[in-house]
Length: 251
Length: 319
Image 1 (cartoon, helix red, strand yellow):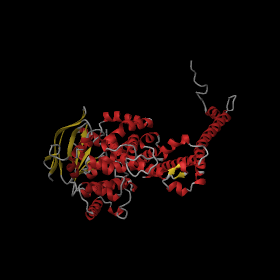
Image 2 (cartoon, rainbow over the protein chains, first blue to last red):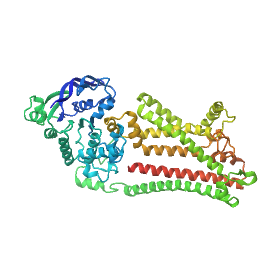
Image 3 (tube, rainbow over the protein chains, first blue to last red):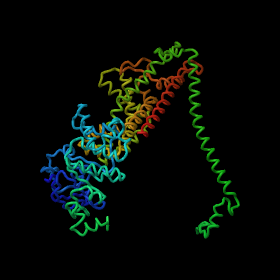
Image 4 (cartoon, helix red, strand yellow):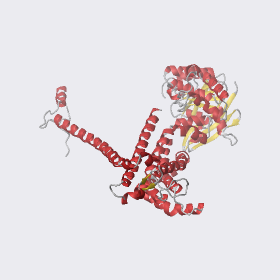
């Protein structure tokens, strides 16, 4: 497995608050990397630097380097819209647009210039199939996306992200608003998707990280405490703080 | 010194139970007193509601009753479709005014809606926050300016400007009135649209940006469609205001009963015609009745507008 995302001594400030402290890591491609840690530890912040969603928060300052496939994504030559097309994101709250199921999935491709009906139909179908939602919605694609259940909505959001053909999929606590069965479906889906996509997920749920991820990163107060193979991190943590966290002593 | 109510400490269940019984240890029967208050209050509320309804129906009734007398001497067909308005010669065709009202409203909306939406987008999405905190109160103040003032501005600034720009001799007419009305309804429509845009949840914007959309694409394809029912509401409200506006229109429209087939031709609308003529018509004349009928027409149009607003709002809640 090669490295896809290379983060070098990254520091991030929200105004005067030092949210990420000297973070360095390599994220391998075609695998699931999980970020765990207590609330406010910076794991979501790091995730949002990867598709530059932090750009929109006023007062954010970034030092250091993030290279995706060897290109520094914060350099001037990088076009943020193209970056976000390549680095898809699924949010904590399912957030389908108040449009039809079809239009939700077709939204991204249309943005990027695909107009032909046949091509759009094809993208919508493959994306919904990839997100394991096709069977449930294929007969009513014109229905409002808001009529779906929470878990279906989240899978629709995954389909919508996949429709623009990204290489990386960021999942920001994508199951925390869902019931256990929907959560399980999304986890299975992530397992299926990792053969084709590099997945980085933030999760509050340590068991989820243990179940689905290949690598796990443990954050505390904006620092990376430990980064290793998931199995190793949970069975044999190097750092005392990691052990305290995964055994439930805090967080 | 303040003392706590005597029953503040209750030591046992029996005491608690007995204290819950109404009127315990009181000279008044507390229960009866409360029920009297409640009943009185209810009666007052119902009476107020009935009173408001009564006013509305009284207005409708009196306007309609006097207005309908028009049709004793004028056929409805003539009234609605003839453009001969010459009360001196017993010709009461109100088509000019009805057409004028609709044409003026349409033209006003044509100018003001796109402008308002642009202003609202600018206010809600693009303006830096320090400017927002200044602009919003200013716009709210503009809503409250008396319409006569807008009329003055139109008369003294806009009409000379139109004369210079287009070379017409008069300047009065549909276009002048539409511009004045646009300036009047602009703050209303843009502030309500602004609120509707602000109310669009941030998560929709996030989703759009995360798919690689630009700000413009996000606004046009996600934010405005999501704010659609609020924008419709704003437009209908502005339309209602434009239809009923009198003073500002009287001052710039020219007040001549001829059909408004050009932008710069003095004409008249329902409101302006009523206000110009009502003070010097004989009380018991068809002329007077015809003016009432025109007022009644305006009333019906604005009531329809309100019904439309309600329908749009209800639809907005559903989706």
